Amino acid sequence: MKQMLRMFAVLVVFVLTLPFGQAQTLRGAQAQKSPPADAFLAYEKALLAGGLDGARPYMTPAKFDELEGMRASFGEDGFRQFLDRMRGGAQGAARRKQIEKVELQGEHAMLEARDGPNVLTVQFLARTSDGWKVDIRR
Image (cartoon, rainbow, N blue to C red; front, side, top):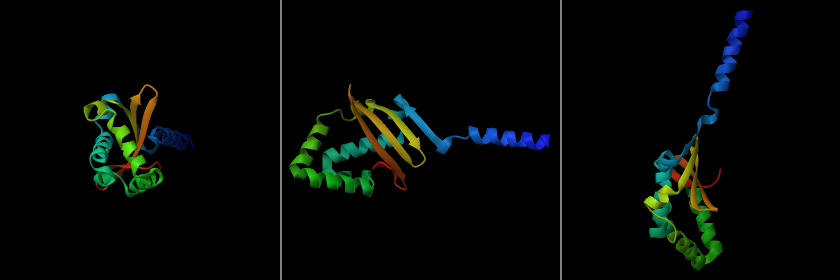
């Protein structure tokens, strides 16, 4: 009986020490150099250079539909203003430095980039067969 209790206790400790859903939080340089960060930066660059069609390879179909809906709501002029505001922010290496945190949970990630003292961009990503892509919140 004691041996069974010991085995049960060891099993409980083992289960409790397993990482829950393989969650991992990357911060600083580790977050900035992560594959989700690379996908996020490629998406933003393509969106600014080529609009929705240019950025399509860097986002999931759900994200594309979300941005199409945004463009329909704002109208072409409103969507162009949205892109102009993005162009006014940091890009390239400066934008990479704004990435503070990437939370990974299985096939999904949440990236946080600090745009200003009181402004935080939160972007969701999904790992697909083609690599990481910008996604909607799941």
